[in-house]
Length: 102
Image (tube, rainbow, N blue to C red; front, side, top):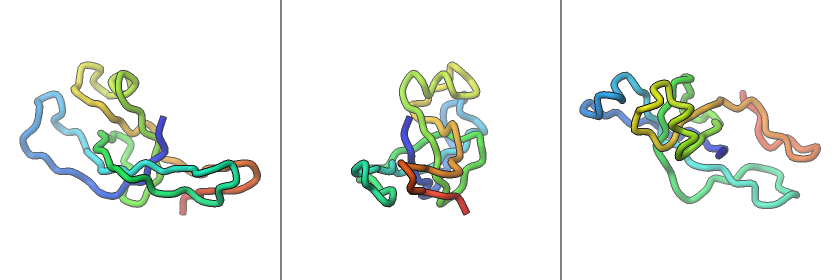
């Protein structure tokens, strides 16, 4: 699983029929640099993930990729490679809170 920040959305009016009604989000992976990290750092790249949970811009989310994404998708036969499977409330590392939803 990947921790990621939702940075935006993708609208595709023409898409594979199995993806009709699917919401797409642009997400950027979040990095924990070390065991002593005090915050989550934005990663370099972005990816597009399907979302059925209603995540929005600025949310911290859990994303799965590959075969796990297909298992998590509403339609197990849909052509997805990344799926939002959770909206994160907090991220704790040791006794430090690295993220807390507002």
